[in-house]
Length: 81
Image (cartoon, rainbow, N blue to C red; front, top):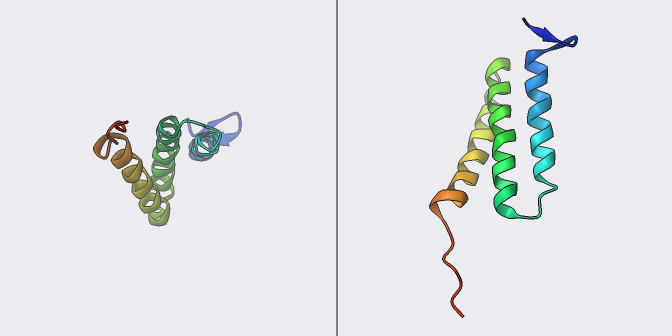
């Protein structure tokens, strides 16, 4: 099965990637934004692999890495009053 509703699976992955990245810009909470954006970027990595496009792969792996860093490694300490 290479098509669904007349659209290739590769294109669907690209559409999902675009949808999640766009959706992430509507988030008010930065943590939610980073999670949703990471989902979109991971779809873009898959899309780049299917297209054999290194610029798409490298850029989105870098963005996911930045999101991962801020979500899990560089957790801010609660501000002391």
